[in-house]
Length: 371
Figure (cartoon, helix red, strand yellow):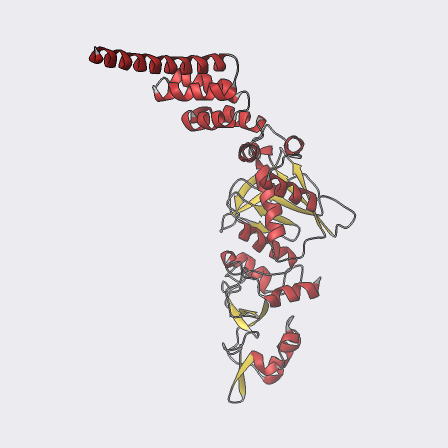
């Protein structure tokens, strides 16, 4: 009798447990069908564990359409080919990371104008987007513009490059608070590869005081009123090219055609960082004094004797390497034999190798004095 009671008790326990499981599943199904987003998500999880991808997709999607973030995250993870659709759901749900990702994608979308992009994301509460709108606001046209720049592109997919240019300007060591920078679309913009270095050469009918052209190929370059940038133009490249606009010359070896023009004095503005002399081995003291008196950075060097080294009664042009500021050889005019270029420092600056990002304080001081 006691044994039969134990068997009956065990049967009742098992039956009760099975009934509880059945009721739990039934309740979850009932809640999911009634529209409970959390229940839909949990039901999808069960189907996914049972390897029923179709049912899992269905219930995750129903939950996601109610802006339930865990369901959206599951869809993004499990069905990545439809990420665009899931990201839109995440944006509608207010997910900051999704907003940023969709906004970044739209910056390279040729079907979305910069005006439409701004209108859509202006009020988005997301740090990256706030940073981009702060850039746009910082350089929008106002009454205090001393330098007005128009960035010209052939299509709307270059919006990201426009924002990258604004960021490079802001992060530069130059004073740019009085710069105004706008965007212009020129569907007729045409670019080719010119000269021996492969620089991009572009034509645009857009007229502006200064222009930045976003070319689709070639190497970046600078002219007196136009910068031409390419998809490979990093922030440091952009700042190097801006340096040309502000009066700094290249400190690496120019091509022969450019060197003949620059090193013979045929350029529009006085160079702040480079002077050019003949290629004589020795100079008289009077010649050294004359060079010293015409140095843009003369005020930083106490005596003319610090830009040359005496050898007997003659002087060899060039400062001792122990000096921080003086007269040091630059490679600018190496392509022609009768000229020698000189710079004020003996380090690789951003005008020699843009990737150093080095702008000596002397250069910025010369720039402030020039402006």
